[in-house]
Structure formats: structure tokens, C-alpha cells
Length: 151
Image 1 (cartoon, rainbow, N blue to C red):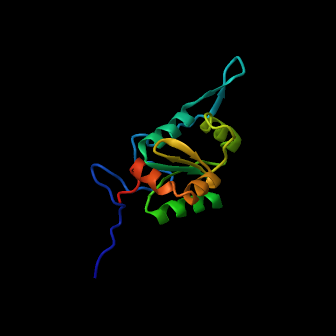
Image 2 (cartoon, rainbow, N blue to C red):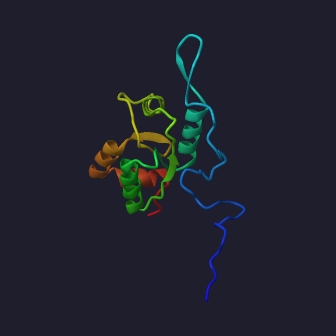
Image 3 (cartoon, rainbow, N blue to C red):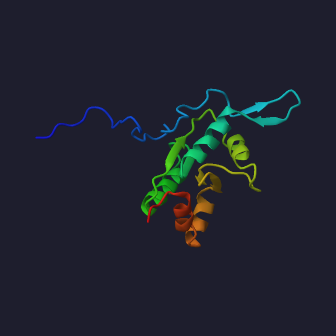
């Protein structure tokens, strides 16, 4: 009879990919809020946004969302069904969706809410944009180009 391994898989080079815990050198999110206001009243990027952008740069596919969001589950299921294993960054209830979406999508014309999907370090969009790219037949080539698919 085989014995179960009581500890999660670890090696000197990698760790077991738990949800919400990136395996990169950015081991934990900063404890500061994601949006800070300067004395002039303008909003500037903080460590939280930079942490998420760093995760997006380190992982071929990153999904940023809430653990209780059904759309995040659909995005993850779609990507897993295609053969990609996305890194998932779950944010807590204390984070304002609109503020985070606005700061993550600074280069996108419309404001972005969860889930936010990054492929190859670039923001693709939410579930609607990901589905549009998939229906157009561009998602698999994009995943291959980002290194998320091997074949």
C-alpha cells in the first residue's frame, strides 16, 4: 500500500503552484493599498499595481480576479481546456475593483473590471475580450507565442 506524501511538492527550483501564491520571486503582495494620492490630488501607481505587472511579466498567462467570481472560474476553465496553465492572482475584498481595473488598463480605452487576463505580459482584457479572441481563432496562436502552449 502506498503512503501519501504529507508535504506539497517542493524542489530547489520550483514550488507547487497554489492559487493566489505566485511561484516567482515576488512572493507576496505588498500590504499597501493599490492606489495612492499625491499632494496634488493625482493618482499614481503603487507597489500593488507594480507587483501585478511583475507577475504578468513573469508568467505566460496571468488571471487576476476574486476567488468567488464565477467569470474568473470560466476564464481559468477555458485556458485549462486549451492546455494552458494560467497563474491566478486572487485579490481580496478590501481592494476597489474600479480603481484596480482603471490602473491596470491605463493603456486600454475602456475601464476594466475582473477578471483581468494577461497573456505574454500584455493585458488582453476580461472574459468578453478573451472569448472574442478565442472565437476569432487568435487565442491559441497568442498562447503559443507567449510560451503557454508547447504544441
